[in-house]
Length: 72
Image (cartoon, rainbow, N blue to C red; front, top):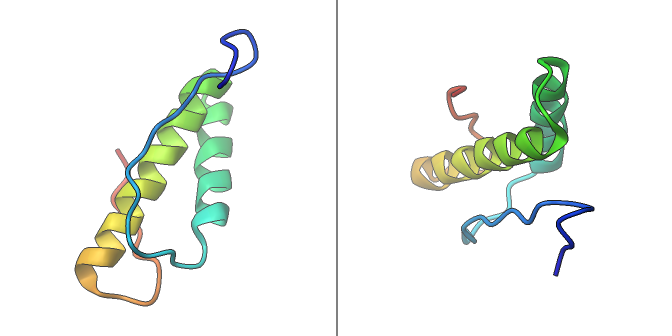
């Protein structure tokens, strides 16, 4: 459980693959949104969604390499 003062819980779907590069993508997306002036909570939610969308695209493409989803 996460206390509201210290963070915001983020939920995402569990997909049956774990391609390499998701951590790098998460950090890149998080940093980009923070540099745009968004809050850390908004940046984390955005980064999580982009990673989830990219993993789903990878799954649907039946690829071993992480496929990047278009930016939202």
